[in-house]
Image (tube, rainbow, N blue to C red; front, side, top):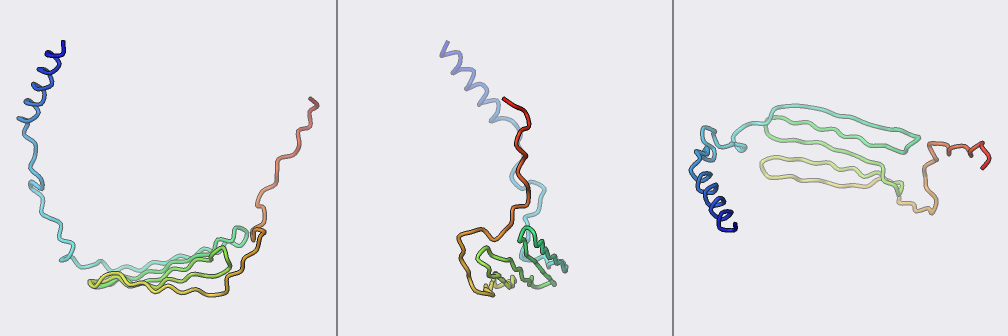
Length: 124
């Protein structure tokens, strides 16, 4: 029985080796990331949801040579982190700054956004 299994495996492997698989990149040009200019664009968004303490924003602009932008986020310790960046042929450079002073408190800064379910009204 084992000999039959081995023969079948070799037969399948030999058949698969003869299948005409396409060659890598056959008919496709190699990607040329370095030669294609950037498409100009500009976008931005901001969120400030006071009940959930979500406060963040992002802005980005691209011309045909570089991408520049910044984003900010309110951190749990009360500070705001601001990252300004530029990405071009020289790489990605980010400048990270913090506004405010870190404050640590043992109780959470958020309020409970939901109410607990009422106690059951039936008697056991």
